[in-house]
Image (cartoon, rainbow, N blue to C red; front, side, top):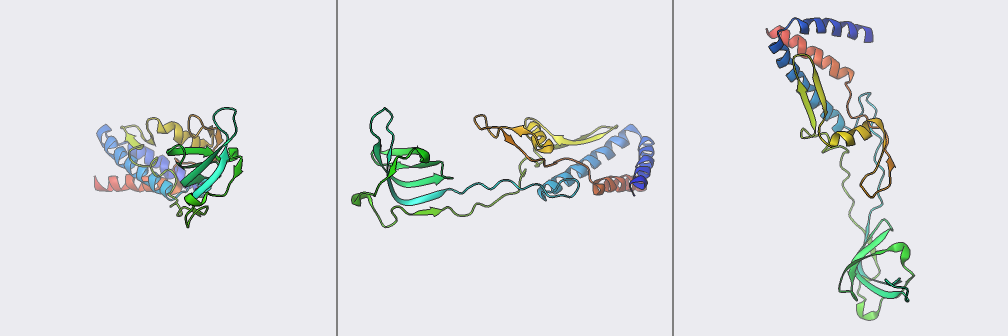
Length: 223
């Protein structure tokens, strides 16, 4: 089947060369738009060109929210004894940091969970019915990966009378390349480098090739 398709594509190339420059440009533009739409649909379906599914993203630990009050000892800015912190309406993100209203400071403050010296009972005057209780936030809707990356804003198409192309534009092309090839990169400037699994975003499938050939034959049938 591969050899047959290659032979058909050879014939298709000869047919293309028989067209005028303007006709080829018109056809190539149509084909590039169709190919781009196919790439977006496949990426939205989370599949590589060979039909395999993209490796799913790692799950993040959901944050938890304290509806009541927490009390603990925390190192002070200097070298003195740790101070007692009474915190209301806090969030706790993946066990790394706690953010909430620091009653003594009278403002929102963030504390590193690992630095807490000791948990203390909540003073009665600050306690309420929900004190000390934690609840997980509502489940986060997991959106498809590369939803924005594969939009028409970033995944561009183009053509001239000799060729057509589909690719990423601007700065996102570097991001797409990391995923396309499975490279190592930093999620943000201050983050540690991460090894990204290969998720092949761009690539023509057998269905794409067949569709392009059908477009060519339909074009010749109409002229």
